[in-house]
Length: 197
Image 1: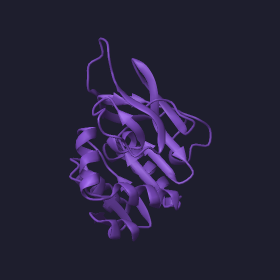
Image 2: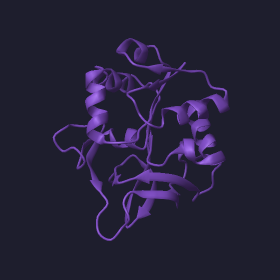
Image 3: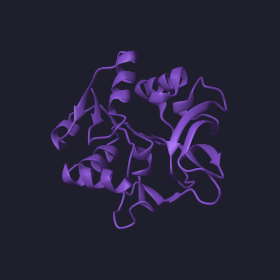
């Protein structure tokens, strides 16, 4: 059973609809026990980094998430769910992220329109598992004001004023900065690729 971590994210319904369209059974996760019983986990995310981290801590899910990932449970973080994997974010510097990836999530600066919203092209490294059968440079839907740095696990990049990580892949740990649930057929294929791993 796929567990969708429900901390009140605004895109929860879209993620549910995506899984329903694929025909994948899921349930909403609110407790460490429900999380532990999930064969795969999805952390959707829109909104504020601090609010997400605070909600996960209030639900006592921080360490269970980290433990499940260390025990090789497949995990997919979407948008803010990807950013939560890092050590910290400029959006809430007083709160530590999950610390599964090194570095700090930064805000777009300069003359850029923020948030970055709309379709943008990503550039995948060869063999990126989530992006199988999508071609090397698909267009996907983004909506974010902060971006993740490059790390060893960066599997695809995007550029909006500055280049940044668009996809993470590290063994059973995955993250996407774009919204697959809002990216049409390509987004459906990405979610299905995750479920088929």
